[in-house]
Length: 205
Image 1 (cartoon, rainbow, N blue to C red):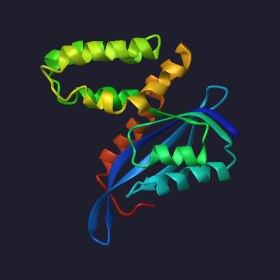
Image 2 (image 1 turned 30 degrees about the horizontal axis):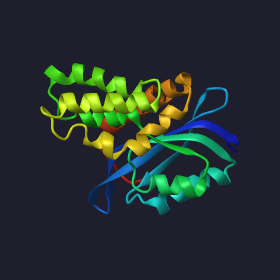
Image 3 (image 1 turned 60 degrees about the horizontal axis):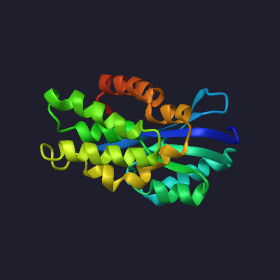
Image 4 (image 1 turned 90 degrees about the vertical axis):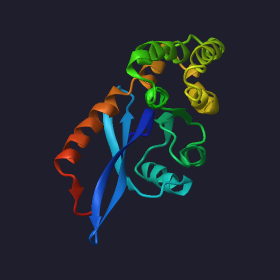
């Protein structure tokens, strides 16, 4: 059985190809990594998904409940379809936190190298602000500065603010753990190396 309480859960995806009856299709393996009360990392489950929805995520979260999990403080994930609704149904007291690392990465995706470092430094003033009020002021400044050059770059911050802003409810120590996803990134980089060594897997099992 799993622990009853996990302060933080991360959900991240690794995409890979599978040959199914001679047809190659793309699947996602969702790694759920838990940080337990002692601060140790545990891979709780790896779930294979094709058509994600709130129903799919509810079944994944209910499986964790069936294995003994009673409470989770924060679940960090990218904008997975239906995840917010599933969390609200399975763990009503749990905060859903949009993954800051993915948020930054998506913002900088179409920014050329010459501006990337300066833009990334400005983004830090948002998610490392002392509180939400200061973060919103930083958001306005960064948006005003960069929107003329990159018109859509900051749109996702405003659109996703409800899922980005829960981070400001927590202490600086907890917040640093939230926006530094080295744990799951290093795990997934290992899986991706294996994935590259074998470009197509024979089945999804």
